[in-house]
Image 1 (cartoon, each protein chain N blue to C red):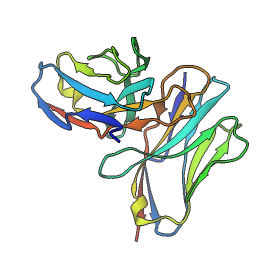
Image 2: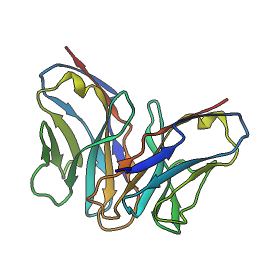
Image 3: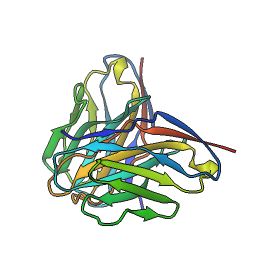
Image 4: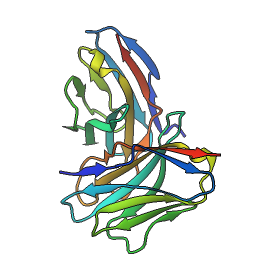
Length: 115
Length: 113
């Protein structure tokens, strides 16, 4: 069975510092995709970044990067130079690549950026 | 671009009432799904569909029904509402390929009294 674990219920980080949000996963699929979403207080779900299990390089999107360690089954989100607007809930998600199946999410991490 | 449209945005039900949450997408996505979000529980999958005529259960399917008669629509039916179904519900859709992200509706805040 697939499983996503986010062990940090909440984090407080000073503005302009880098922050790492942890995500570990478990799957028996040989190929899979990993996703991160942001949910601000307004409630909408915003897609941030994607990493494929066979991608050789870690994904980056602006200030977001994904620290993908396949052997450890971890896909941590790194936000560089944090901003007040980064305060939100962050979810890690996974789905298999080569078969029709569901997308599953972790429980999320609430990030607070302090001025 | 409409994307994923969920209706209603807010709803209050009495225990025992039934209702249907609507979800429609205009991106020709094969995959559609319903999640509920509760504090500390993340997004839990209720039901999902990989194409018209195909549905499957997720983690928390009890008390909910779905059908997928068209590619565009994926309604979620609450058969007999219970206070435990008070939650925020999200519909999401994506292409079938696993490397594509899911697009979410704006959510429905449901309260069962």
